[in-house]
Length: 160
Image (cartoon, rainbow, N blue to C red):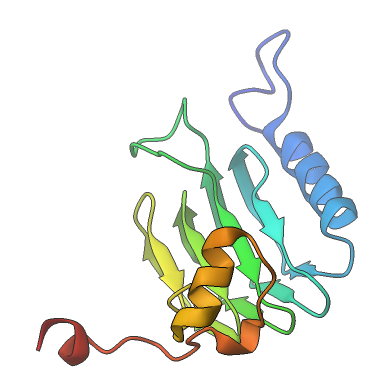
């Protein structure tokens, strides 16, 4: 029993979570799989996984997009974006608070991880390296995703 069960006019939290999980399964079709006790707070996450992109969530994962009742100052919903063959794997017992993950290839998060509000986790730098493809991207023309830098940045490179 939750506190919501005993108050008239309130909806059972477990029922809400089950509905959210069902909607998410339908919405994400074959792109998303999740373990037991997925907890979705607030809005449903934004999922963009074209072609063979996949998102795999472990057991007891919390996706927090609750702007009103959250104990952290959220500025965005949880988002998952993959490249054509990208994979995002989240381990067990993880909390994502308005977190955005972008994997052109692969992101793997272990167990027992927490992410602060508006964290961005990515395996790429979002833009083509060569100037011709960058100009095409800025104009809105099509360009090959193969031209996008897909290796993680190293702290020594950024600050060294």
